[in-house]
Structure formats: structure tokens, C-alpha cells
Image 1 (tube, rainbow, N blue to C red):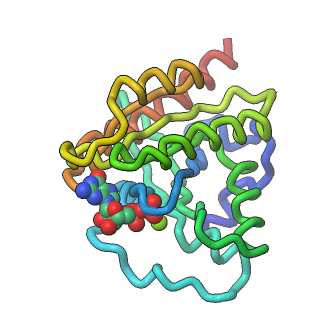
Image 2 (cartoon, protein in one colour):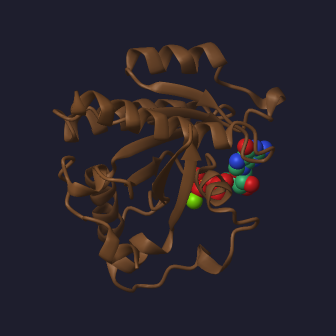
Length: 206
Ligand code: GDP
Ligand code: MG
């Protein structure tokens, strides 16, 4: 199971960042409705959102695993396994959800902060999430990618490409615009994460 293979500690020096069988946790953050689940489902190869919409009051670990997708990607001739966690929920502010949010901020080996180019407030939330992450994971140089999703909705655009790019420069992270609907740039996004993870791994080794 995923549980037995993953080191659940927040220690970034853990053993799963070395060796051939590399496992990295990628956490999706962002406002409700920006397209996190759509991106995660494309990553997982799921065509439509299945019965996972319903989450009972089971164990929190179960909640966390329910929206977790694991896939091995071959990027630049090398295999890397990503565990994409789509557990971030901004609408419900119950105690349980708060716990999951804190958990998300602690366990990621990489973060994807998603906003919708059609929703300026989601862009502002993305900045807040970046600041929150920096505070919580201060000393660590974790890969972060800012994603402007729904790039297909050109007529509803509220956030210019240049704004997204400028924001990423300020926040010292990568940037990409995607369209989950058109599957545009989604593979590039996840490959980009793998490359960012490797860059940091390789610079640690030398
Ligand atoms: P989440 O709350 O962040 O997980 O967002 P969802 O993945 O559930 O998406 C919210 C809504 O936006 C759904 O109706 C999706 O079909 C739609 N959506 C997601 N990505 C895109 C996109 O790239 N383009 C368009 N046009 N709609 C999208
Ligand atoms: Mg979702």
C-alpha cells in the first residue's frame, strides 16, 4: 500500500529521496474550483471524477489517501514516482479539514499552487498560500510551481500571463499556464515538477 511505502515524516532528508525507486509527494494547493482535481485526475489517467466525491467521517488517513494518486513518470530517460495529493479543501473550515490542511503544508516534497486565470481572487489566494508555505517550511528549498489553470477560457481571463509570470519571479518559483479541459500543458507541469525535484537532489549530492 501507499502507507507502507511512504515515509510520513516531514523530514525532507528522508530516505525516499535517494536510490532508484524515488517517491515524492506532490501537494496541490489552491482555492475551491480552480481545477486541482481536474489536473490530478489527468495525472492519474482518470477520465471523469468517480465516486470519490463522497468522503465519509472515516479515519483522517483514509481521507488523505482517498484523493491520492500515484504514478511513475519517465522524464529525460529516468523514472520517478510522484504521489499527487489532492486533499486541499478551502470551503469547509471544520476541525478535521484544518488538520488535513496543516498536514498538507508539512508533508509535501513539492507544491503545485493553482489559481484560475478567470478568477482574480484565486490568484490572490495563491500568493497567500506561497507566503504561508514559506513560513511553515522556512529553511527548506522545496520546489514550488505556480499554475494558472483554465487557459482555454480566453474571454473570461482576469489574470494576464505576465502577472502570473511576474508573481512567480517574486516568489522564486516556476510558472506554467494549463488547461485541464484541453489537457494543455498538464504533462509538462508534472514533468516540470520532476525536473525541479531532481535539480535540488543533484545539487545536494555535489
Ligand atoms: P478543484 O475544486 O480545484 O478541485 O476544481 P475542479 O477540478 O473540481 O474544477 C472545478 C470546475 O472547473 C469543474 O467544473 C471543472 O470542469 C472546471 N475546470 C477545471 N479545469 C478547467 C479548465 O482548464 N478549463 C475549463 N474551462 N474548466 C475547467
Ligand atoms: Mg477538488
